[in-house]
Length: 562
Image 1: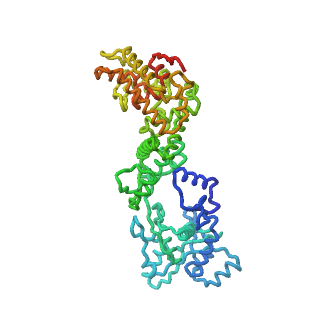
Image 2: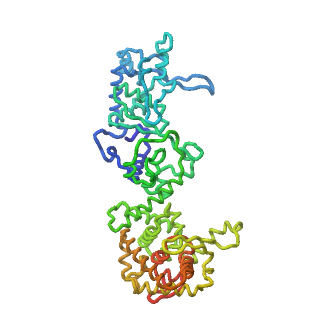
């Protein structure tokens, strides 16, 4: 239901709301674009329905026309406007009220008549989370109930609190339209924020006035920041709209729906990572009482989990989940765009077009799927895939210059986490030699492994190549295939072949030598930064780039080539 009177509609707001819901994968059963038996679905188009129900309440005696105008009470800074009924309009005979409205054209509002004192005392207002709700002291029901103990009371003055249902211009109030819409659309559960808790007795009274069954009400706590203040646009560190989440932070739909569903919900399972279908299957109305603090750390945790899950689902050879494959391709485009934003000369330096860059980024994502939080973070983490050694050294220097005054003279330390090679700490590439293995010796080992790899595999790697080479005749066909499961299959096959050749070059070598080689390769190829196994890094980078970074030349390619 699109709520709000016509004059309150913001241009583009409805389209934006629909677009956001569609992006999040939330499909409504009926409404705009879908249709259904209970339309129209904009309150601005339902005024005739509201007028008909207003007349029904007038005819039943549960509402009355009020001809009182607003008044100003008090003086100076203490002045205030009152809009209560001060002429006892509820006591006007129906015929007289109709005459004033129709013949005399006097403006009027329609107000809900108070329940009788006996009825008010007997009524209860239940909420699924907060239990029994007490009406506010100035609400119609509370006043009527209090009147039973007022000696000689004839309810005089109580109607000052009677709630307006229809304004003098004929438009319904939110409370009136809301109750009518929910009933006609057969709503069984009303779940909303606690700011509406105070209005719930009024809504109950409206259901009573129409003699309609009441839905189940459940009021959830408000979202607050870490200072326990209600979220607002002043929370500059939080993205409070879908567009910002999606465009500025690269949040995927599954992450956002998962994150929002967990806010204020007592998840009955041990696993918080759920897609929309799992949320629907596991959801119950065991919601927490009180406000909920929004912690963005949970969002980023879920983001990593959902991206990794999508990549895993898209990578399976029997994958029939086009949604996961599309998600991987979409993320690859986002990563590629961010890479170009951070490194504008990337396409020129690689000799690629946008399409090849996107496939390259898809391979990186499939190989390192468990670390993606946002595109800027991910590109920076994997910057060695995009920067030459010289460009990396320059960028690294620029990053460290602001901290130069406080930094020590010791070299940087990196921890390389991988699947098949050894995690190690290192300083600069020049310090990679050890007492047992010189740099030239390690370079020779790497060259031997690469030469063996070339002779034993039909395709060079998955890395986009600017032009076919004697050893990459099948590469172009591979790069035209964007299917993530195919890309993963090729990547795993080629990485396994590269790993086998690296191991073969180390045959009969002591563990220290293997450790030294992996350390050397990580420093030279990924600049000591963490990432996938070195075999996988080498396959993604491609033979040309690997040779350039190692400073070696192999027949069929050139270290100085593009």
